Length: 333
Ligand SMILES: [Zn+2]
Ligand SMILES: [Zn+2]
Image 1: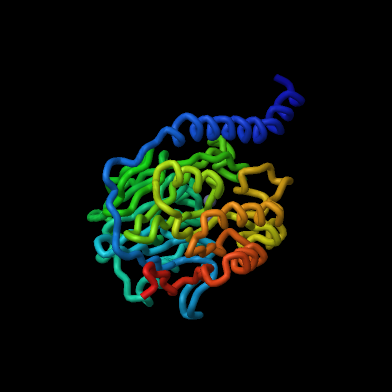
Image 2: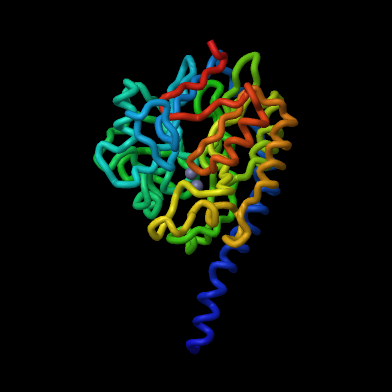
């Protein structure tokens, strides 16, 4: 093979891998996800509290913020940690651990850990992303007593974990949707393992209210998330909380000294030069409005302020700001 051939293969590779992953993701969606059923009686809970421990905005300036996600999900029966933040500077204690201690939360109170998808801002850093692992801090945190649910392809060297391949009951009234795959044109390691990204969301069934969907980055796309929840549950969608990836006018994550707006061009499920438009965000808002949700709370870790304002305006009093340290409760009192 000559220099010319090698060059053209190298240039073509990201596109081949992007479209290959897209085909695979679409096939998984139509052949698997759309045939899934709920695993028996998932039951329901009386109340739900979502306390953001890591996100882009905070309620109090003493709390650390990052373009990452970690939420504490509490019902009357269980306490689940959903994602473990970014820990961008590889610190110990990490921003997550520091916020937990400021908010009076310890790992002893947490019985279950669930990771939405294998991206740095959800698994505790880029080294964890590379190794397909997760870690709440740079130093050791004992998770030996926890139930740990990971997306396909992820594991942990020290603790027993379970890879979620389909919808499963995490605890009473708390269900994982199972992984929805998407094709991501992402720089770095994920480009070469074909950029195919599995992401699971949580659904909490609250008695007398309906279901609340909790999302990490939202690479699955709002349309597929809602379709899968509709398909699995015969219940109204009471709310949706978390990241949906609408970095239209700016990106929280940047590279090359701020010159590359990472989220605007990567992780969108599209080719980098076809960014998400304002019209697409407005179309998604219309799609969601049809469900008449009583709770909408968009994470700013992967959405710009323009998108957040558009959601706030569209959902009025049903929109809740998502801030570290500020609990979202259902029922409200
Ligand atoms: Zn994210
Ligand atoms: Zn992501």
